[in-house]
Length: 233
Image 1 (cartoon, helix red, strand yellow):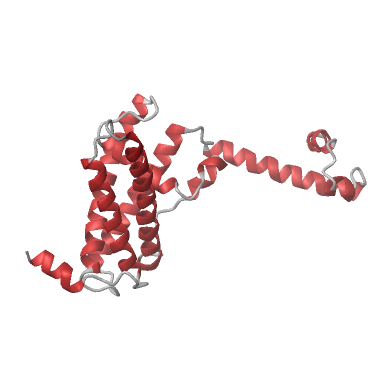
Image 2 (cartoon, rainbow, N blue to C red):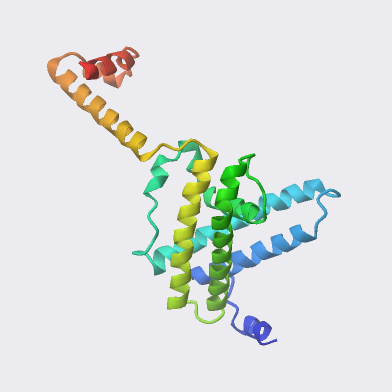
């Protein structure tokens, strides 16, 4: 009863630009879509079910995006390192990856097998369960704070965000590595070395007159064979 009264009394305005207010309404929308999805019989209305799943994923993306903005504001120096993302294939690095990771974590935590990768799924399941619990703690803490003070980030909230950020980064690396080929640190280092070698080769070839700037500017096809051969020499 008190929670309902506090929610009615202190609920932020939808137009409030504060991040906690934005989170509050994004999380409300996510809960509403989740409730409708839970009550729907997908076999009777598959089209509506597909629409709701798409809407649910979009809501997850929005919630995570706001949580990330909040972390950038209140724990900017404590964010989990994500240097490993440079090793991901280009097609993986897109704006809604976070939402896909959340959805994947929930599926794994519920016992699903991801893309017929049984061993990888079993190995990731404990982390997925811990991540989903941590995310629920963060959502609860942010909702509660949104009904108290939109301008304050408590130490308890910061600690919950730090823990979640570390788990999410760990799950991101594990999940993506299981789904697609990801270069090892050694492979990535070798790739960088080759890039540097080719750049130095082009620079020296221009100095010695083996190549012309026009050939480079015009993307001369022969360069694809010439530069590696010059690099070997």
